[in-house]
Image (cartoon, rainbow, N blue to C red; front, top):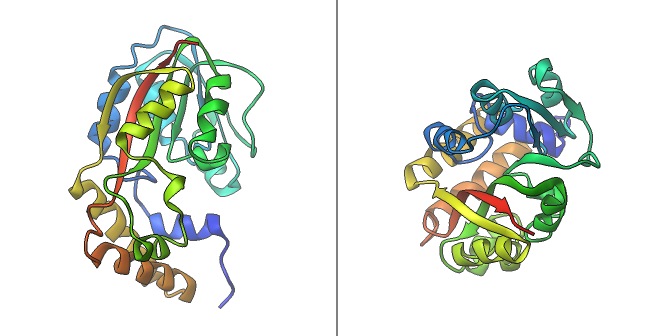
Length: 232
């Protein structure tokens, strides 16, 4: 069978999951309700995929939406009124709200992405960030099963908040994905990957199963959704 690139593999694995991250829709909607955006606020969604989060923000508030992503398939699936463009880098402008959920890799990865995000947020503006963190220190076997990740690619929960503060942000609100959220997200990807019949995706599913079922496998990786204000 012909190989798949990373973007296609992600689309197949996520299937019909609404969100490409372990957040529950209820948790996301609650955070959006707390944004209190004024009419005409300028909003950017970083590496937004189909722009599901941006769509929800634009449905609740009268804003000027914009987004970008490097995957043309997902960009074409985004609602045209959200002004999502095909790009690998953000525009050279600032915004009242910047959304970056499971997308820090598009800005150099954690924690470097925080500096890039600060440059995109207007002073006094907001950042809605969805980022992974370590619930406990990962072992070597866990990191191998995660695809050769390294421990310094993420921080613990306190380190995540501290890194944002060091970048000039003040935490305003946060929630984390539950065990049930993670189970639904990861096992749905396993199911979709297995049913694809593609050897590369089935190998990916096997690594995920190995990681989830090893001792501490469900207690190591976390995901936080946090709202910040840029203060400097």
